[in-house]
Image 1: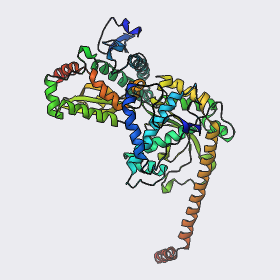
Image 2: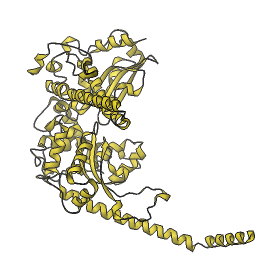
Image 3: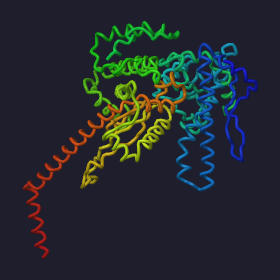
Image 4: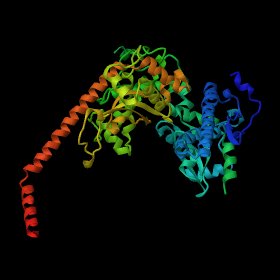
Length: 225
Length: 297
């Protein structure tokens, strides 16, 4: 893992810059080393997942946005519509992975420590207990066919926590405009295959050891009306 | 069928991961348990040894893909259909019934994935690839313009299946099942080759097409050998692995099936016509009509 030591700037958030008036997105750095989540998630997976998969979503998202910009300037309506699926897929991939990296943290930095603050209370209230929430997310994640995500989200309108799944790279907001993701778990095979092969439930069991509940709690407090 | 001898029945592949040890006893006891139940659907081995597609598709990939993924679809389906109305149906019928016009029943994913994987293993052979020939090539050129543009089409379908799924070459001979959509001059030229893609477990049988070729674009099909390079994997699949002989023979079967169906439809249509003209009540109606008209005169 020689490359990971280059992480000098530990920037968070959706990196973006501007080229000739058009916003372009860039790959955010990880807030930890690629190997820092071992043994729950191997360094090899983290590196491929970040440098290859996420990078490809960013590249193709920018490409699609540039094509969209051109098509709109020309008033080319069919192309504008045609680009929507690529924008949803690649833009969704960028959004989802950007959240996912922040949802993870090494064990020695607090990975897996259950939330104590208001999010802890809300989880007990909506799901019965912290363990019941994990069980529910494990079950829904394991049952999801093909590629996708399992989410813990906040419904800002109904003021309640929800567990949802989305297919492929659909972001949580596609399941409801008032939904804010607090925690997303990637259940694409690329997220676990090198280490767990076809045993997705083992991956789901182990990932809880490196979940950053502090981040989810802060987000919950910020988003709670 | 050398592949049946693959060391997979009870023991994990050589490269061992911690979780193998955990799941090993469970797998073994499950197998022993299964011996007492009649297995309705079988795990068919690929028609070549598991290392025969190397270096393009590794033995390790096949050990997991066939030995684990395909196997669990079979085991799960056998569990699922026991005691249901799907029990005893042929696999194709289970697929169409559990597709349930798009409102999927639980058995669908396992049933369709068994079929898809059997079909996929048979679509490949060691030293495959190259170009199709004969009738198949003629139809490809007729329907896509050239082999090259078919290839572009097929690769693009595989690349743009956003998520898990399959890309297919199919023979499309079905007609809309609507009374007024009957083609007055049906001909062999109405039947076409088309490229389609499908998400997750869905396959073209549910649209009543005849599949000729498929490539699996679930990540588990290529991750060990190609990581995130799906396009690369699909190119190699077409260049080095496709068995065009198998695709050609499937085309012959699909054509024969379409002809058989056309004959059957024609026979039914004639029967209906004969019924119409031979029906005494119809004759009476004509007579009535005539009297009606004469009254107006």
